[in-house]
Length: 355
Image 1 (cartoon, rainbow, N blue to C red):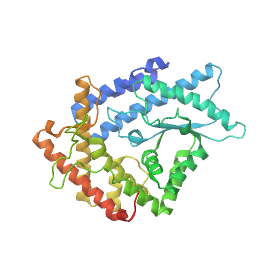
Image 2 (spheres, rainbow, N blue to C red; image 1 turned 90 degrees about the horizontal axis):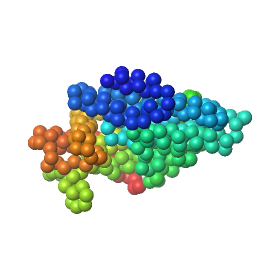
Image 3 (tube, rainbow, N blue to C red; image 1 turned 45 degrees about the horizontal axis):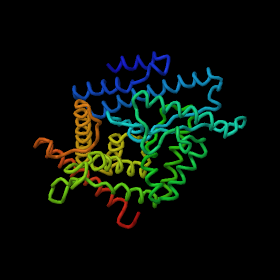
Image 4 (cartoon, helix red, strand yellow; image 1 turned 90 degrees about the vertical axis):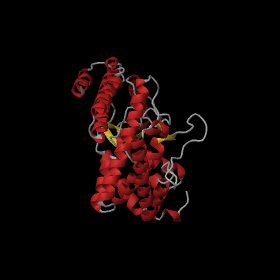
């Protein structure tokens, strides 16, 4: 049960007790998925359990480094999550997206602080892997020196991405702007969020470029409402449900939220706020919510099927493997996602910019 897993994490007094803990978390999620219930609630539970696991690893490794004579954390610090974990939208198939920030302190040289925290972060990332959460293929982890930085440099990074809306900064923004503190030893994440929203409001060009970037991934549905699939290769006759279905909703909700000063990261919460403000009406909001939840349900179902067969889950789906009702619902969901992208195109006049 969820409470049993929480208790196991809390009572763990060594890193070895946490090895493979992600498997227990996935078992809880699988049980809840098979029992049914709101998609958002299940994803939030998975995120909460992973958060507790991460915080416990941080605590144990602080103690370990002190026992080894390396001392306590030299200054206050925090651990950030990005991507699906940052949005509280974790599923069964997830990897690490994290970073570390630390506070400046006059009596601690920045280089010495960075060395301590980098060694610490490498141990944390290693034990998250041993716990069952794989490394980020793109290297967006606190063990990477680029993502283990003092607070002032983190602020410079974020503001720099806003000032330079070229392809790479836009890619970084789409990843990092869904940040959430799993552990915050200072109030920096909340100050960063305020500074970020202020800078975006002053830069209409950045948000327009970001909106254009959010339209790159289109739903795999032709004008004749036929599925558009891969023509050859490993994934022949399939499409990527995450990239072509879920990501467009996540990206569009992020752009609208940032432009409106909405602080929540969760996609469904963002859509609810966007609806409350009046950018989308009640009927379209209801359709969007239903479409997004169905896409997540379909993704999780595929992951469960893969795990039952003993293979690594992915996000590719062959429409022919679905029954008639599922195919009909999927086409309707993609049509709704297309409508959301049309809202983005019209609101931000994306035809006027080129990336």
